[in-house]
Image (tube, rainbow, N blue to C red; front, top):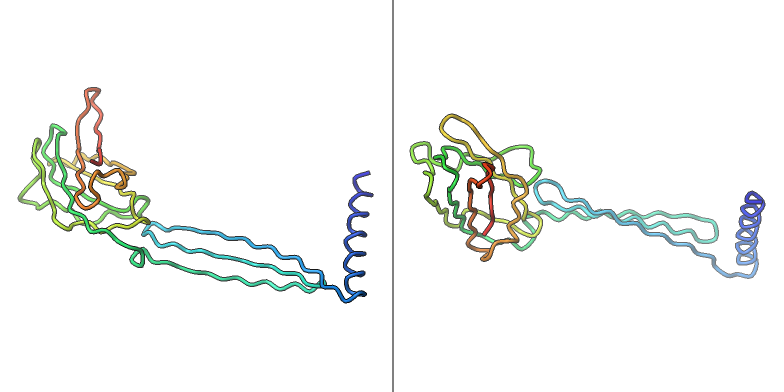
Length: 179
């Protein structure tokens, strides 16, 4: 039964196309698909494919548009990091979420971020809507480190003055909170 319905539908479609061709009418079918991807650096690529079939002749057009993260409106922010972890921190690294590498150690080798203190970097961070999610890695003097993934800068109370509070919770776990 299903096979007969498919054949009948195909025959009906062919008949409509033939009638359209014989009467001078144009039979057109168009479909469009769009795919958008964002890489770890915040660059966005949008690919649009449009297929059009007119009287049995098919044409396909594909357009690709890439927007660099630097092309988007960026915010330059001061970054304050408060250490309430119970340990002095000697290394700290930031990277965009899902990046394959950490950047440079932002702490001076001779000037660790002591427990109970806050360090502020003026105009230290440039981000945009494609780069709102960051990861942070911190290490003590012995090299014991902890990574905080997915710090969402959109939660900052003031987008130009971001504070990240690193703390030791009552249950012994560490947390990083964007304020």
